[in-house]
Image (cartoon, rainbow, N blue to C red; front, side, top):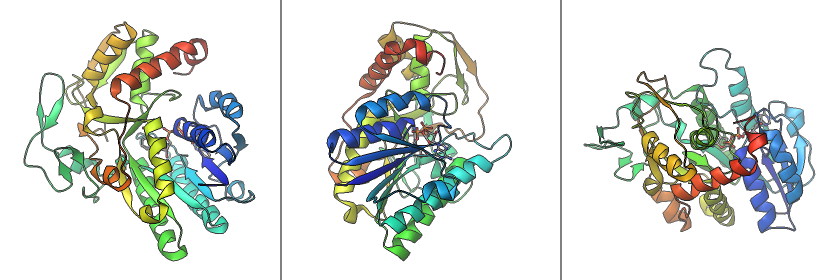
Length: 353
Ligand SMILES: NC(=O)c1ccc[n+]([C@@H]2O[C@H](COP(=O)([O-])OP(=O)(O)OC[C@H]3O[C@@H](n4cnc5c(N)ncnc54)[C@H](O)[C@@H]3O)[C@@H](O)[C@H]2O)c1
């Protein structure tokens, strides 16, 4: 599958898990993790990478020279990002644009020069907020559900790749969509082999969840550390709905995509846990209570933050059909695994999460 792989953002949650998965599946392959350790908690993954036989390179994708060297490379997985939906919203957007957009350019140049295949982790946040806000929804006791009629790009399963793309989408989403466009140009102009995965919530052990990114890990952590939580927006009852995919299910998919890269090149796939792994914040709370045995104070904040959406569930039909792939881990498994990871590293993680 590869001889020399570079996982950019390789000390982050997704990157470190993917790098370790690659090394485990292909012990003869050389796997390097490249990261500037910007994300709080990413330094905790270094020992785990080392123990798995993944070498670490400290570098910054904003800096062209940092991305320029390396010997032979035949695979790049780009998991680096400033992944917060709130990035830049209260001030300077430099970091999010330079990392998520200029960084993509530097990685594309590396891929072009080395003739390496690229897997790029994009986001469901490329879909504009105003279209997601106009998805017809109805309220039940524990969650929002789809109403009717369903607009273009929305099926009973969720959001497809046909969902409209016009309109603002947050700086994070815009930087990712702009990266997708650049990647498409490199595919056309330089015959780059590249796959784009528009992911919804990815989660699992080693996610350093925070208020603006990593909600499942954050929710589990607060239940374990017995800290209060806020249900923000859409009336403050926690009815907003998402779907989540376990990072190991994503890793399984990426290997299938790599094995079929000619077929996959140039397509954007919506990737997520899909309808079976959808949950509202209220339902996630109930699950966290059941798994951890703890209840925490819940504050209701009815006002909605800019950029928040009430309903995003991935219609995974295209990616499931193309790669004959299915996510295997359900929400209970995900929450249980995150809880045992946090309990196992309680003293380190209570300072970070
Ligand atoms: N986790 C999710 O729910 C989710 C959902 C959709 C898409 N994604 C995408 O998946 C990828 C991985 O996300 P994640 O959840 O692992 O986030 P993460 O923050 O845990 O990992 C990102 C890593 O990139 C590193 N990084 C940031 N700026 C950098 C820079 N300038 N140079 C080098 N490294 C830098 C960080 O230190 C971090 O280790 C991102 O591209 C993100 O947009 C994640």
